[in-house]
Structure formats: C-alpha cells, structure tokens
Length: 425
Image (cartoon, rainbow, N blue to C red; front, side):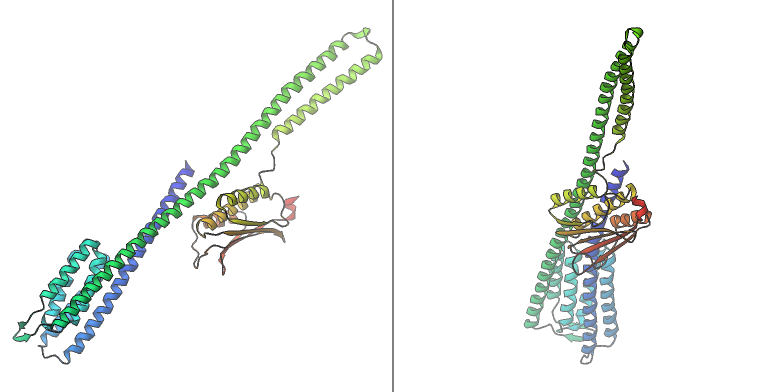
C-alpha cells in the first residue's frame, strides 16, 4: 500500500511539473508581449513629443494624450494578471487608441503602432478565432474613423489614400503574423505536453520493469528456498526412516544374547555406533542444507545481473569495471550500491537519453570508490529530485558521500563509501 501511494505521489509530482512548465512557457510569452508593448508605448511617447514641436494644436490636448498613452500601457500590464477581464480591458485600450488618434488628423503613424500592439495582445490573450475577429473589427473601426473632423475649432484633415492603404496592409500583415506565431506556439505547447507525457510514461515503464526484475529475483529466490526445504524434508524422512529401521534390526539381533558369537556381537555393536553417528551427521547436514542461503544473488553478482538485464531491455551499451572489489561488502552496503546503480541507470535512460554508460568501482585506501558516467545530454543546472535525494540519503546513512557533475559530454555520479579491510575478514 505504501509503495502504491509513493508511486501515485511521484506520478502526481511529474504531472504537476509538466503543468508548471506549460504555465512558465505561457508566462514567458505574456512577458514578451508586455515588453513589446513597453517598446511601442515609449516609441509613441517620443514620437508624440517630437510631433508637438511642429504642431499647432491646443496645449490642453497634450496632457490628455500623455495620460491616455499611460493608461494604454497600464492596461497591457493588467492583461498579464487577469483572465476574465481581458476582453473588457482590450476594448478599453482600443478606446484610448481612438481618443489618442482623434486629434491627430492625417498623422496615422501613432494609431498604426498602437493598433499593432492591440492586435498582438488580442490574438494571444483571446482564443484564436475571437481574437482574430476582434482584431479585424478594431482595424475596420480605425479605418472608418479616418475622416475630416473639426475639434475645438481646429479643422483636421484625414490621411491620404497611400497612408490608408499602408495602414490596412500593415495591420493585416501584423494580424497574419500574430495568428501564425500563435498557431506555432500552440503546436509547440502541445508537442511539449506530449513529450512530457511520453517521458512520464517511459519513467513509469522503467520503474515497472525494475520492480518486475526485483519481483522476479525475489520469486526465484523464494522458489529455490522452498525447493531446498522440500528436498531437506524428504531426505530427512527417507534417511531417518531407513537408518532407524536399520538400528532397530541391529538392536533386535543383539537381543538374542548368548546365541551370538563374540565376533558377530562386536560387528553389530560397531554397526550400531556407525548408524547412530550417521543419523547425527545426516541431521546436521540436512539442517545446514535447510539454512543455507546461496550467494549468487547478492553483492557484485546481483549488480551484474541488474546491469545485463537493463542493457538487454534498453539497448544501452554498458561497460563495467569492478577492479579489486570483493564479491560482497555486506548486506547494508550491497543494497546501497545496488540502489545507487539502479537509480543511475534509470536517470541516464529517462532523463539523459544516453546510449553509453560506464560503471567503475574500486576499493582504495579503505574506501569504496564508485563512478557512473553516461553520454547523455547532461544538465547546465542540476536540480536534485526524489531519485538523487534518495541516493544522497542512502549514502549518508552509511557515512558515504555523493557528488554529481556535468562534463563536456554527459553526466557523472561519484560516490565514496568508508570500508575497511577488517570488514572483509
């Protein structure tokens, strides 16, 4: 039950990591849009300021226009943090565009630039179909709004045909590019999500396979134990029954007493003693057979079996060099090394996408030195997850040390475990 809950927790964490990554990707796009909006509004501000030098419009318009530019920029910031009000905010931002452009008359550049920012935000913040429709509506309204007007007694001309055509072309081009980029981003987002799902599936399959290996080894060990105990019981019954009958026959013959010659009686007594000794030796041998535990599945041999099985399943080329290591370091250390190797192989396959792995282990200066290298993609920044933290905790429990590093090619795990020669004796 605890193992099941642990797997459920790991699966939940993996799903959460995938969702968090998607949220980070979206937030990056939103921040990029905000940055583009900042550049646009700064350009509009300085363009408007430059325009004032040759403008004969009333000065009370200037402050109003600056305030509207600031409001438009603040709306761009609010779009990142709110979702339900985005449609309303975009309409308000477009209204500020209309108010900013109304007294500009034939000067269309500022409206074109501000509308480009609104189109980008409408496409990305609103679902693609509605965002595109809203952008076309904004373009149409802005186009129809370009006509001669009289404001505060000032007559304003409309832009000429070339400016209007350039405005339409530029706006539609920006809309097309925005929709294209949104589509590409959506496909990338879906692909990223599917890749993460496949990675999680590979992890689950790898874990299941390793669990199956452990289960198969346990079942095999249990089957051997049962068979050994069965054989010992049968041998005990057969040998015990036979020798007991033999002993009873000897005792029956000895009971004849005076009818036996001294030589025969001496032989019978010797036979009786040997039978008793044989029964005692048989019991002792059967007891040892029953309690005997084979060493074929412990220590280095168990790691060899793990590596070869993993190599066959994944197709990864794994090189092993165990140098001067003994067959076993003891149950506790053997298990730590086994789990370290198991987790390293899994990470190299699942995260590193490795095709080659090298495992080196040696006993030097009363220390077990372990180095596991793979030619995978490595990581510029190593964030310890459940697996690496588990390795560190297991090694710490036996006073060992643990180190990870990314070299020019691949990923390396190094461990040191204190181990004296006396422990081998």
